[in-house]
Amino acid sequence: MIDLSVVAEGVVRQHAAARSAVVAAARHTPDGWALGLGAAGAADADTPFDLASVTKPLTALALARLERAGILSRREALGEVVPELADTRSGGVPLDLLASHRAGLDAHRQLYAPLMRGERVDRAAALREAAEARRQDCTGAPPADGFPPLYSDLGYLLLGEAMARRAGADLDAVVEREVVTPLGLRIGSARWWRRGLRGPLRLRGARRARRPRPGLARQRRPGSRAAPAARRHLRRRLRPAQR
Image 1 (cartoon, helix red, strand yellow):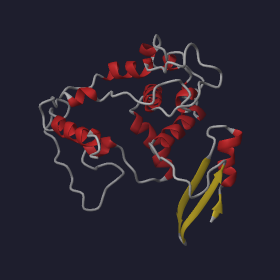
Image 2 (image 1 turned 60 degrees about the horizontal axis):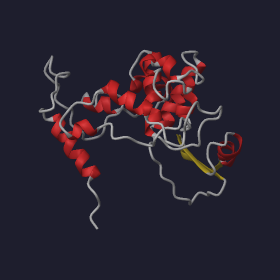
Image 3 (image 1 turned 90 degrees about the horizontal axis):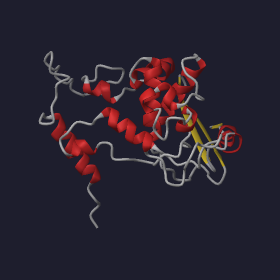
């Protein structure tokens, strides 16, 4: 077992990103799996954590690689990269604060609500709502080190949009180019699933989806088979637990 405590200490003490941290990594070698584990703060290897979104680290890593390549800077404000959001409450927030959950945004908004009504999600309106979703205790311009951290899906939604704009490609393509391919990973985004598992991830026994007829792929309407399926899935996920 490789001791990764120094990495966890860096998260807690050097970067002050969290009060406690547990770091784990695994790599397959010709001799089997090489495992690493480390902890810092009040946590140890047996402390339960909410993993939340495991795709956010991939997005953050892609952001770092884009900055290294000179494509964008974490110090740039959201409104500089996505001009139509410049007049929102998050327009002047640096991308770094979005990435570190210090932009003062709410944790979550039901941006998918139109799907529950059988309607399309207005992408521009959803982005604007996310950019305006400032918490009541976070007013004015953010301090240099940001507002008190609060895990926010909205911040990464806006960050992903900014990265895609500057990189000139959809976010999943950016992550694949900057992270997935260089690391030799075999993972894919929801876009690959929609295309019938023709991307880097292929599950054993999974049937290839039927190829849509030309001209129909971008013309799904709320009454199509896709929208009711999405509504059923959301209702199951949002149904209150039975007591």
